Structure formats: structure tokens, C-alpha cells
Image (cartoon, rainbow, N blue to C red):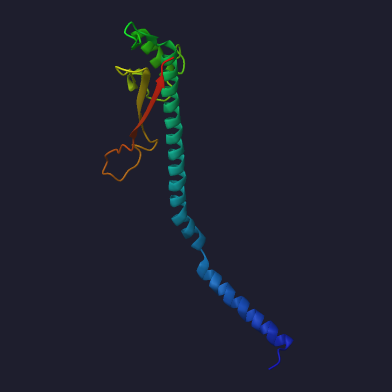
Length: 168
């Protein structure tokens, strides 16, 4: 059977009508797909943002501990028994330097970080000075997530950084 121009046009018209009918059944599918995928994408974006924020704050905490320890190793004096002697004034100055980034500043480097979060230890033998800091990291969305029968959830966890350096 040969294909004539009129039969070709007729088959094209039939195909077009079938496609229009199938498009009628597809109406609204894009909205449903977006409704399903957008919450998952938003959750993924927020999780990546929170992870980046936690890594940044952990880096800041390491910087706090490192700067405090550097100040201490430069200002520690060997005592009469050849052990390292750190005065209370030097410890207070070092902690302020670590927490506030400056000895005169009153804004902490990390929100909620205080001088009491920093621990300075000098072993009984040797010339190492250890500085440790613990910071309670809290999520931005900690108390805002529902679904727990009206109770707020705390998604925070402690970040701990420790540095040991040899006194100069």
C-alpha cells in the first residue's frame, strides 16, 4: 500500500489528536513532582549549611585554643624548681585573648564561649603546656522543629579542641 499525501496528512492529524489527549492527562504533574522534591532539597541544603557552620565554629575553637597556648608558651617562666610557672594574671590574660580575640574586646569570638570554657594545664614534669576548650554547638533549628508533642529538641553537641606546645 502506497502512502499518499492525503493518507499521510490523516495519520498526522490522528497522532496530533492522540498527543493532545495524553497532554490532558499530564496536567498538574510538574506541581506534584515539585511538591515532593522541594522539601527534600530544602532539607539537604539546610543540612549542608549546618554542617558548614559547625565546621567553621570548630575551626574558630581550634584557633582560640592555639592562640591561648601560643601566648602562654611565650609568657611562661621557668620556676625555681625548673618547672613551668604560669601566674594567675598570665592565665587570665591568655584566656581573655583566646575568648575575645583581644585582651580588651568584650565580644566573644564564638557566641556563648566564655573564659570558663578554657582549661590550662601544666604537667608536673616536662615543659609542655596544654590548653583545652569545650564549646557547646547548637543548631540554628534546635528548638524550632516540631513533631515532638510540644517539647523542644536540642540538637547541640560539645566541640572540644586541645593543643599542647613546648614552653620557650
